[in-house]
Amino acid sequence: MLIYLNSFLPTSPSSLGNWLQKMTRVTPDFGDTLQNEAVPAVSSDVVFASSRFPSYKIGPNNQIIETMDDPKVMSMKEIVAHETAQLLDQQKRLSVRDLASKFEKGLAAAAKLSEEARLREAASLEKHVLLKKLRDALESLKGRVAGRNKDDVVEAIVMVEALAVQLTQREGELIQEKAEVKKLANFLKQASEDAKKIVDEERAFARSEIEEAKAAVQRVEEALKEHERTSQSSGKQDLEQLMKEVQEARRIKMLHQPSKVMDMEHELRALRAQLAEKSRHYLRLQKELARTKKGEDNVSQLYELEGTETLGSYLEIHPCSDHAPEVSKCSIQWYRVSSDGAKKELISGATKSVYAPEPFDVGRILQVDIISEGQQITLSTTGPIDPAAGLGTYIEALVRKHDTEFTVVVTQMNGLHHPAESIHVLHVGKMRMKLCKGKTTIAKEYYSSSMQLCGVRGGGNAVAQALFWQPKQGRSFVLAFESERERNAAIMLARRFAFDCNIMLAGPADRASLGT
Image (cartoon, rainbow, N blue to C red; front, side):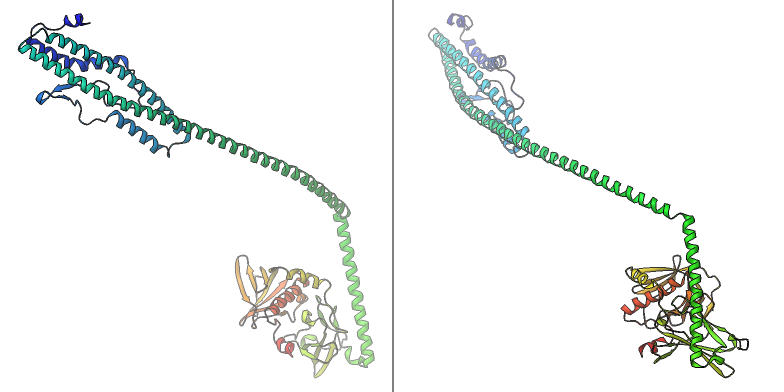
């Protein structure tokens, strides 16, 4: 090896210094070449400031200083610490899977870094060997030169020894960095194992949740199936019940064919007509019997009361003698008399030959005074007015409703004939009454002491279907209903609701007599 080096050493002392300076410049290039050949590419996760041996130059007082190619660059130790801090900072923000992947990458980078440090240690050893051989060659040359050349060789030996010292310091730093890298590798390995453990725990927890979710879904499916079975069974029962009802409806329809229903209606009408005729005949016989007992046969024969003495009908004065004056020329006044005859009440406005009993007249005797040519004739019903059959049950059903509607026709308004006679709707509510035509409200008033309601006192043969309603002072209506039952139901229902509001709803001049 010495023979090989002697072949390259200069022979003249003047060129020895130039050769040494060239050697100091060649040494970094040699280290760079060795580094590039021996060390593989570093991972992208770890960045180094420089991958070559540092270059040196001679400063003042023959001091060897390191040249700085770049401004401020981070050392490998700072870079590794920075990467570790970033990993720890991102640990809270990364998912478990990403954290494990990151730690595995860091572990691989640490392994590469350890391998790189090992290769650099080998290169440093080769540099030590080279410097030792160079120093030995210079020592050998020192013994063969003299004078100024010898001083140059001594200076070169000093420079080589300084390079050896700095190389030794660099090796110490490399050894420290290697220890730190090993410590970092162990930390990353432990962190990777912890991350894997966390991943396993999270995977087990996720699997348990998935199993619980599957169990919950299975329970829901079973509940849905059970509900479906229950629905099918209940639906089958409902279908069977519906089929039974349809069969029953068909049976009823077969029993009540339209022709049979019409025949039954005709029979009912005929029976009602016969019953009314027999009732009139019975009343006539009762009246004749009463006149015979009183001995007023010659006077009472002039007029008589015709009609059924029940609520829903009407009574009419008829002459029964050719010598009787015309009823239209007579003065007429109707009265209510208690069943025992102790109390007699004048019915205000009842001055016509026709009068339809209203609900107030039920249980009382109706009496009428006929005055003609200074002679007064008094007629009365044979007994108290009877209530209408089934009306009480109908009223009890209507009371349960908040509002009941009746279809009516306005025949008079404020005492004047109403020519239109269009269809209106009368609302009887728990707190008020309202008359409407379509969406237009004609009258609407709460129950009060100024409101009046009663049957129409006088008129034609439709008087039993009409009532008089005064919502407030200065406004009144005469309303015609579809039937006598509807008219009496409206009167009784309104009076019942008004009574619940502490209002006595009656006709004109009826409150005084009712209160006494």
